[in-house]
Length: 97
Image (cartoon, rainbow, N blue to C red):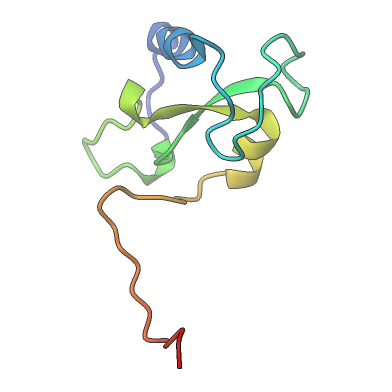
């Protein structure tokens, strides 16, 4: 099921996230805020936790879930969850002798 998108909310998020022209959240490089929208270095708003991963009744289309991104980085991430706040990954592997 896809999330219902509100264009006014989307436009407000774009304005807030791009304020001050911050770098890409994922790679840390500068974003070309004047680039054509199909340019890989163009600005896009990305959702840290993808909208497709929302549980029933959960609204992930919030400003605190939005970050500035290159178009290429956003497309590479796709709908993967790369980071979840409060999640610690534990491994059984010993990294030292």
